[in-house]
Amino acid sequence: MTRHMRILVAGGVVASLMLVLAFASVPLYRKFCQVTGYGGTTQRAEVAPGETGSRTITVRFNTTVNPGLPWRFFPDQQSVTVRLGESTLASFTAANKSASPVTGQAMFNVTPLKAGSYFDKTQCFCFTEQTLAGGETVHMPVSFFIDPAIAQDHNLDDVDTITLSYSFFRKPGDKSDVTN
Image 1 (tube, rainbow, N blue to C red):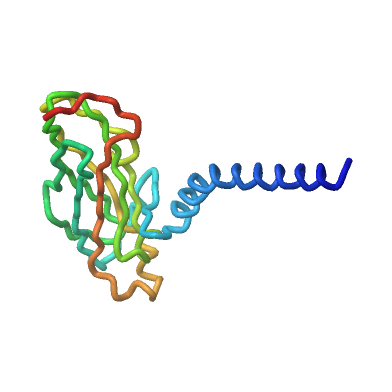
Image 2 (cartoon, rainbow, N blue to C red):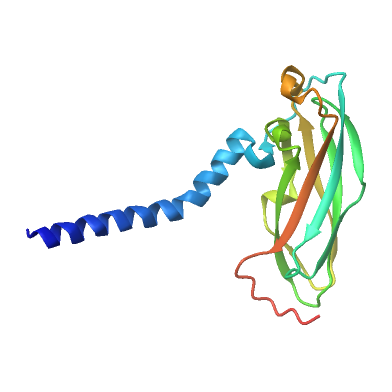
């Protein structure tokens, strides 16, 4: 094999590895954030721990809708105060302002970011895509708790309010005809 051919093969291998890493980076980063709570990513749990602490934290709700999604989306309550470990149910309303069905997906995080690893959801509309028929309005629940272990993390002693934020985006590839 000539020197030029070896350089060409080595360059092809490097380019292929870079391409594979580029495609793998998004799911790997998402998994990293879910495991560590990095960037305010919440955790997912099957059930609340059953034991509650005496400390309370106020959870505020914040919502936005991407301009490409013809929906109204808002919390049914502005905030709730919860005890650590207490299973809590909050609900949100989404309304499709168009005449056609539209599919959206919610992205979420909590602030302060350092609280993300202690904020656990057991059920959430954000786990799956949501399709609303033209003109349809739905109530969407989220069930969550704040892990009592937050009380042992002295870096979070100053946290008495957590903001849970949702942003709804149109599902990529959603081809519904939205003219309204």
